[in-house]
Amino acid sequence: MYWGLRAQNHRGHQSHGFLTYDNGNFYVYKNLDLVPKLKPSAIQEWLVRLPGNVGIGNVRYTTSGKCDDQSIVEGTQPMTAESDGIKLAVSFNGNIVNTQQLMQEVTQQFPDFTCACDSGLVCNKLLIELKSGKDFASAVKSVMLSLDGAFSVIGINGDGEFFAFKDPHGIKPLCAGHSPDGKTFAFSSETVSLDINGFVRDFELEPGELAIATKDGFKREQLIEKPRKAFCAFEFAYFARPDARFDGKYVYEIREEFGRNIVKEFPEIVKDADIVLSVPETGDDPAMGVHEESGLRWERASRRHRYVTERAFILLNNERYSTIDRKVNILGSKINGKRVIVTEDSVVRGDTTKVIIEKLRKSGAKKVYLFVTFPRIIGPCFYGIDMSTYGQLIGSNHNAEEIAKIIGADAVCYQSIEGLVRATNCGHNELCLGCITGKYPTPLAQEMADKMKEKFLQGYQEKGRIYESGDHANGIQW
Ligand code: SF4
Image (cartoon, protein in one colour):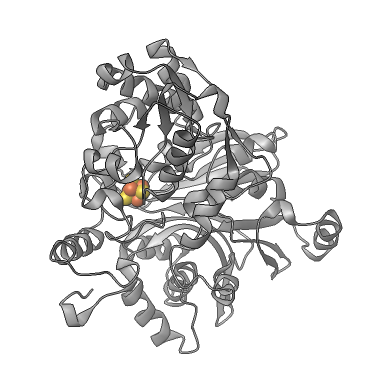
């Protein structure tokens, strides 16, 4: 579990937790910060304090609830819940959209419940369904039907059974695998956690599927079938590790293809460039693709400082600007006088990209063309990526030309949505493209997006994450 979580620390850097089950009891360790910051002596100590042969873990960054230390501690997973002798522990990746409705239901049953984050709500909702007398699969099915949002869940029930399920659209990744001797089973968001433990990947859970690990292998049950899947397209461009595999294809191969696509889509810009440079590390693989397709030299003159470990995107606003400035070193003599194509995974707020471009200009770059693999982000995400208001997104009310002016680039060249979809090997109806098309896969998210967009275009300033900030005075309520 330790190495598995460490391999996936890029999915959440604010806190981490481990939980084991032994003889009817749960044992928990939780802490703030990154997993590698756990000292070896603490690991030894916790190995003793976490007995049992089944466990779950989680790394988290906040997309619901407050971001102060106290709230982050409260929201650290795994979550546990217990009532009338029924026990549960869950670890959750995603984001629930109908939290307000769920909160009402949970607090009605458990008046002392105060946790403002959605993992606690999911855990307690499942507990409510089990308390009503349903068998486990029926209880999970009821949870799937009552939640709007993205949820890949793993957990342990009171009998020590190790289970996993995915929302009916399959928005977040979740795969299963086993150890080479066939005696140990694992669920993981990305395949990298299986790889690092020498495990064999068995399958990616289907949307709406429940899987339970038994001594003889995985017992799989399709609880809900939806006419369309909606796997998060942003996983391919930014979120997942490049060495993760989705449906057998490595993410880095897809990112290289993104780079090749942009070259084909903007031939005139390519003709006017001398070198390619990447914003490390998610820009590295697209830079390779640009190099291969265009023949331009990939100049490795943007080096990332190994010991600044935070990912700029998932940091809080005040931390992001200084982190990117300290993290990327531009080797000025290699840039001076050159016309440069810079590959970047996405432009969300525009602030970090602006820093990079300023650095290139200071280094003497004659022209700076930005190649962005993820198409222009025009709307918020409701499903676990913390870009949750129109106001924070530079692409929500500026086109590519305007964005170029704001961030100081000579041109901003976004990969087309068609190109992105083709490179992933998925169909349009298998991907979530909500934040780049405005068409969201779940009904409440769509309703919220449409209402808030209307208000935003009228000049309304959002007061926080859309799904947490129904504003009755302005006629926005959910
Ligand atoms: S809205 Fe965008 S970031 Fe969010 S799940 Fe969909 S594709 Fe991913």
